[in-house]
Image (cartoon, rainbow, N blue to C red; front, side, top):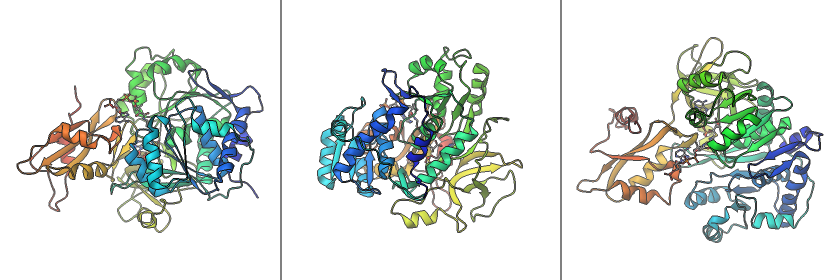
Amino acid sequence: MQNHNLYALFQSRFPADETAAFIETPDGETILYKDIDRLSGHFLGLFEKLGLQAGERVIVQVSKSPAAMMLYLACLRHGLIYIPLNTAYTVAEVEYFARDAEPALIVGDPAREAEFNNLRDRLGIANLFFLDPRGKGSLMQAALAEGPLQHTIERGADDLAAILYTSGTTGRSKGAMLSHDNLASNALTLHEIWGWRPGDVLLHALPIFHVHGLFVASHCALLNGSKMLFLPKFDLERIIELLPQATVMMGVPTFYTRLLGDERFTRDLCRNMRLFISGSAPLLPETFRAFEKRTGMAILERYGMTEAGMITSNPLEGERIPGTVGFPLPGVDLRIADENGTPLPANEIGVLEFKGPNLFKGYWRMPEKTAEEFRDDGFFISGDLASQDETGRVSIVGRAKDLIISGGFNIYPKEIELLIDELPGIDESAVIGVPHPDFGEGVVAVVVPKEGAAPSEEDILAALKDKLARFKQPKRIFFTDELPRNTMGKVQKAVLRETYKDSFKG
Ligand code: MCA
Ligand code: AMP
């Protein structure tokens, strides 16, 4: 029987060259391909010692480091379900995920040791370890004392490899369950269509707690036996320094607008680059054009979501058209439909629905929520508004879901509104995204105070501080007497977005 464990696929592609590097950091840390089995094997030793069983969950909220990458690969090998969390989440937010996922192991940042210990005690978490940004800490200490073991356990196609939480329109996060085959099929497709070739070097500046950085970027490199120039975070100086050594880079639009904002970013700097890929948020056509003018290269925009990885892509060969996200990936069945799921004619705007081998297995312990988002014929309702032309090319034109995407991070207004509404002196609130020069969209809260009350912006922000990750906190708060509503009583967010559209101008 074929072992569907994703790690087995990667292993089958590791380069024979003993000197081939997998990861290089600016601090001079290097991991060679020939060392991945051994380094991840130490974690396997620890997992055995702790008695962790395949199918159990592991929550990981640590800084990006080569060691964190090894931990991820070890979880795959042991059949553990990997749950990465945004490092910006507060412990209050982590608590929600821990209650929902019931992990057998949590790995956290030692900078928040006391808070994590408290969480472990309250929730009765069996195992808690720490890993710091330099790959040191109690996890590494314990792992290095074990093994290395060398198993890559048998997994079936549908066995889960990871759960990635995406926020929900109700304010409750949902865990998207992704199988080994979901991840493998998408990685193999992207490796193929983006023309990965020997000698490609990936400049990796994305976080590794989301699909974009963890799966799309790293998996392509692993399948290609490529080196990753691994930055702890987006760092303009480092990127300018490293670009001449790279051939491929993936980023959110903010990466590209920030690069364009620096005059050292030139055609010559990109002389060895063959591909810049953008996604997670809409790339403005003006950014695409400015980039082309500066570098002579057309950014390749693709579209995806946590529930499925990548779904469409502009072509490697052929025209990349700004404002479009290209064609459905091979194996992906895609349609633009009305509210009943009936396909619409070409060029009409509707909701993008799709299915394919990359489509997830549902939301963790939320069968009703899962059912709501699938059609009877297995198509998934993305919540994105799109059109498709006669040639099959897709354009994302908006969102049916109430979602803000800021610097590539998704923010669901409901989650913030619920917290603001429960504060003293506040009647109600509406949270919207408006154009932001750096993040694409910036979060704005429009608040209606209770009669006679005069809450201040500072009070509201102070109250949100420990409850919400920094990137979700409103960057501006406005007060008003009343929110605009339609005849059904629904808040007209489009009207608010228009009213406050210049909040970040100038
Ligand atoms: C940081 N801040 C943000 C964001 N990031 N605020 C809003 N939106 C953000 N994305 C806050 C910080 O807390 C800080 O607040 C202030 O903004 C300035 O921080 P700065 O140091 O400039 O930020 P940074 O560290 O440079 O980060 C910006 C970033 C980063 C590089 C754009 O957010 C990033 O790496 N984003 C990528 C997200 C991503 O990987 N998305 C993929 C999702 P203060 O100063 O007030 O304390 S996967 C996905 O969407 C699907 C599958 C897909 O299609 O890919
Ligand atoms: P996430 O839930 O973080 O996986 O974000 C997925 C959402 O990001 C999609 O449903 C889209 O709304 C958005 N998205 C991803 N790529 C693009 C893109 N190229 N253009 C416009 N929106 C995008």
